[in-house]
Length: 465
Image (tube, rainbow, N blue to C red; front, side):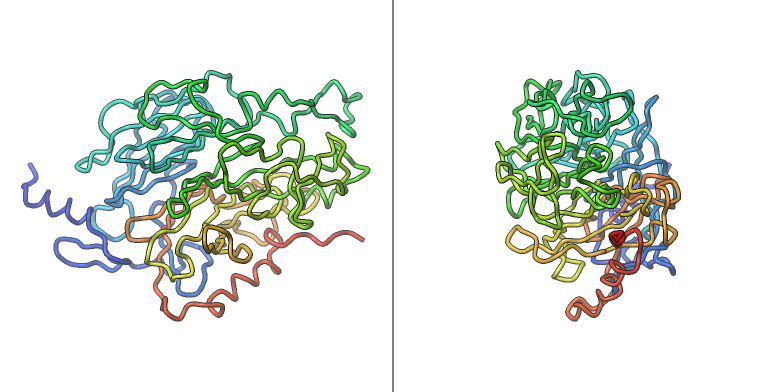
């Protein structure tokens, strides 16, 4: 039996974090980053260490107040779809890794893992669950409690992304199962050119939106929730911003501009359009899917070709995004930084994990970075920046499969560290700031700015003449 004094000392070590150091049995252990920063490229002054190397194909992650990490796995069968990790000796590396989750996995796009009011919330493709966290145990106690059930069949874009406000409300995505609500009866043979979309689109009824539920009520069907916003094709990254008391999300834009309208869109247009949208989600708003898309070059909401658009016709009928990111980058998580470890310019700004593209051929695939968007007064201040690079593993990616890692999940630790997960092997990094925060500025960002021009998976491909 372990002596009570020893048990309490270990528990105290886990629960206590100070800056970039952690207390262990009365001594402050200064976390040491990996010599190579775990392979990441970061702004000057930032360092990184690998918390765990390969916990499995990981989606979103959450970090508890005591530093414990919880990861959602992308598995489609069986149980045990969650992973819990703990660092017991204070070196920043996980030395306890345990699978758990007594619930059926029902699809390979199970996504979310969030902590809210002492509960661990997580989702399969069709169900939102929660379990009560127990400070004395790594694994939450009791059986998973069902909170929301999607009674529709499994479908494309089925991730259940979660967010929570300060009033006990749970926000859940029910994304659209198609690209542009195509009417396949308008296709002649295998030629998709000039395909039309259903008008009105029936998928706006029950899909392509965000629903609001009671975060504490069990076994809620979608019909018991309230439609909060509509016209949203596919959202995998969503969060509530306590500073502005508002919901924000990053949207996966549509595909196939060229194949659906080759007269008006070239293969180059197909690679660089439409934008992945960064949105402030307001109650009752319509964001235009499937009738429109956003063009970040023109900074306009454009009419989709399936509904009469030609790349020139725009509309002001629908809500606009805060900004547009490059096409097909797949923004898969969104985090507003509230810590104090990083320099002041990062406070309340947004980090976005880009999973990376799969369909920009014949041009190189792109994305595979973590970006940062400075914020001021609840809105972006300037352009997005590359914050973390090094995931792709090579300079040019012909296919998604060539990427070494695909950034997926983001979480903030109790000491202000930033945790990043990836979906191929399940590597988890912890990013620390070790520089001089009072003298952090453009000089420390120069090498990151240069990546926008030098890396083929970040820079837009040149337009063919």
